[in-house]
Amino acid sequence: MLDEYKEKQKIVYKILNNAIKQDRISHAYLFETNGYKDAKTVALSFAKSLFCPNKYTNYEKCLDCKQCENIDKNNFIELKWIEPDGMWIKKEQLDELQKEFSMKSVAANKKIYIINHANQLNVSSANTILKFLEEPSENIVAILLTENAYQVLETIVSRCQIISFQKNRDDLNDKMMQKVSFYISIPDIIDAEEKLIEKIETIEKFVKMIEKRKEEALLFTQHLWHEQMIGKEMNQFALSIMFYIYRDMLATKVHTVPFLFSNTLVEELAEKNTVSQINQKLKIVNEAKENIKYNANMALLLDKLIIELSDV
Image (cartoon, rainbow, N blue to C red):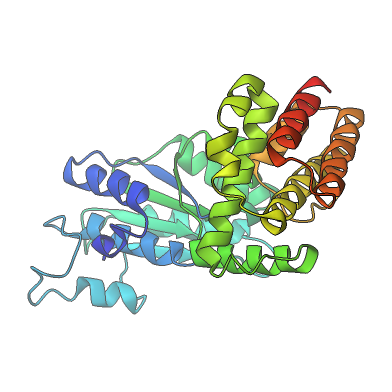
């Protein structure tokens, strides 16, 4: 049940567990899954705990109760699970839901409906569910799932409590390894995925600091660069990552597909720069990459890089 995700999704677990224990249940939740593969199971576990007369979040104290077993078998009358019918969730599906949920609960003190891929509500079905959300019944709880909350009608989002999941770290690492190794030569010193992600995150922090607080970037160069990017090969790798951060800022700016980085940092920094500024910064980073080949003093090169990037 829900306790299984106590460590896997700490923030999500804390919010949902507190809501159960304090009996402060929202009438509607929007689970922003962010690609988390077990989000549907979390939704089902949350529903089980809401139905449980003892508010259990695990099976340890359960005796002969068959309620969760019936839920797993999709044989619990008070729980309705809705999936897209083809490309869309259709109005007829929600009309049927409203009809069923207008009847008195017989197996529990609540009725819960879960809509998977809520971003696939068409205009008619979105308006239908919106009416349902605008006039919530005390004993009905809605759980909507979507990859990205921005893909759901704003009027629906505004009526839900948004629960954002942490992405699958392993999946992110695998994808990042594949992408980076395709475009950039990874130094042998980086012998594990965790180290690669750690190095990339450090470089992202460095770029963010250059873009927002030049003085701090100069102050923390030792910690954010020299202590971690040791040797010519590592420095070339780090500057290559910087190059692709700026390159993906440019891609975001001109609405094309990014190469490596498609995240809020890149979007935020792209917003801060013009196309001309980003192009100039790409030239500066590329020049620094070339200078490393000639055994340039890395400390001086980094100081020059920070100043030039900040002055664009």
